[in-house]
Image (tube, rainbow, N blue to C red):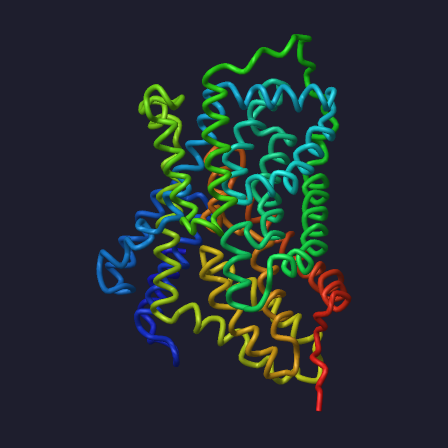
Length: 453
């Protein structure tokens, strides 16, 4: 992959693509190849990416290559992971894990089903998938340990893959559920909170169900193994550390839920929670515990991938890719379904090349809507279709902060995440064509616009 990147840099820039855009694309191919293969540690790939952007001429200088390290989402991740670490260290994770294990009565399937049902329910309390994952990953690690499920066992992989890839889908159902719905609704325009919920609830419920079923199929051997029973014991009262952790977590959640009033960036409540959890007398963590337990690889991978996404956008590389892929679509004007299929097929390589969902949506939704308008289709439907195609899949951990949270724990390999991403690409296509399009028509958003004249 590194050799291919060097060859790409040495070739003349294609028509319509700047030299800087060509260099950024070459760096992107190198980074994606290294992230997907685990050839070197993911954080090291992130640092090499920043250096390569500067040395190749893809960005004007070092400040532009480091722009991702100034993005609020990178510090949001620090706060969220610290909350998860506090849930573990305070004993709250073990308490919740024991609660789940007692309810499932030794059944691996029941434990998995409990987790799946918690995703949509917790979405209303913790809309951010990264926040939920940052807490739940510690809870279910405790549950697997208490149930004597070894690391790397099929059941452990199934649960962690669900946290990695399926948990995120519950957030997109709510307009306030994270970057994906907020940005997509903004780019499409004119979609209220209630309208978004109506449009997304059925397609995403089916996506979540099919993704969960696919994990069951891929790791079916893990669900035949019973969990070790817990010894009978009366639950102990909440300790002081558990109460303080719970209070700080709920406080941060309330600030996230009320952002429509105070308009704070989600990173601010996360950092406030981080400060509280590390303040002596208030928090539950010492600085040494934080340094030892925090996965710094997450921070470097996320920040560097944001830098890459910015470089792809500012150099014109992402727009050039999307334009090349979809240029011939207006020829399908008499075949609306073919236009949607072409949009879905085009979304996959664009998603592969653009590390974060923000860059993907900002690139593809405007183009998809323009194509829809040019071919007499509903631009809203075209925009939503490519959003689902990109949001439903993860090809490597750097594409999602919540995925990085799970990946850093060491339960999944990059190859396993990529393989499941390929399966989910196919699932997303089926859901858009056979669930979303009929549902959207039923709720007043048909694929083809009815001409009034």
